[in-house]
Length: 394
Image (tube, rainbow, N blue to C red; front, side, top):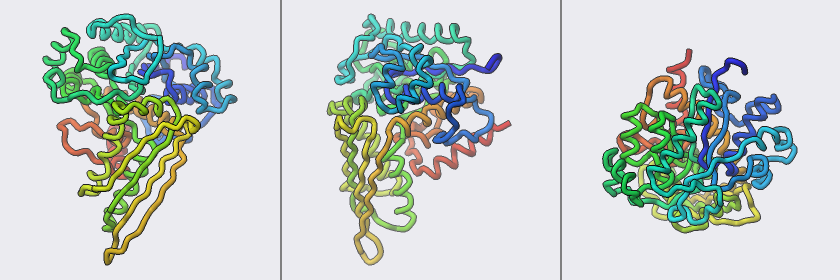
């Protein structure tokens, strides 16, 4: 690796199940202990190598990543043992958090400053120190934190860069922790990925700032399990003129994400992004579209996503499709995070700032530059992204 480019990845929620899984995977690749299974763009040429990635970040829990990984029980203990020294050497920085926006996120590893400007300065200093200490060629910020309750996006504080700057000065409660991280990342010139359903760089003020600074931003809410299946099946039903009369979706999961979503305010943010996909793909409103997410502790990270789909076909005849996806939530999400890091670095190399629409493939609620309806069908999204990658290939 001597002389090779180094790609810093600063993760909000570093001690979570997705982050620890992603870090462990890269460390295994560095040791030659795993291949590239499950990485959808491993064949893409010209992107930064997975093994160029160096990790750090923030979490309300200060446990090192080896201890955190054992606690999440996503990885086999033997896998953790292989990369144990590397994981044990990474301890989260104190995090910016606000119980008003995420009531079930608990921990004592917190930034000891309250003013928004001071919080921005603290995060920015963490990024600058990381860049220098690790001699980084690239630095990306990834939001993998717990889901925040949905803010009022119509407030003037979030409408323009000028309004946002004034809101920072007066500690306006409209600004969430996710927005603080996004603002700090953009002003430091770091591409920002929002893998959560929370409002962050997709608010108008920060989209405007990202364009002005030429910084790529991508989001939001990673499309991993049930919604990924929805964006595969719904286009097929539409193409065969099968009317979706109703679609009942339920999820049970027992990891930290599930515990956070046990709070109704955080849950509403997640349901919003999961529920918006179907009508957009089909071109009509499905009146009986039900989306449930239930915290069930014994399930841990092994989420179960169950769908019952009622269809109407030729001559008004009714049919059903049932899908039971026994997911490994973090195992599905972690490789997508690694691919997103490589792709936003490429976007920055090409000088493409602002919302990265070609990355909609990864998200439940893809952010568009002009607020227009995004494409949701997975096969179309993949075609768009692969064409974009190919356009920059050496």
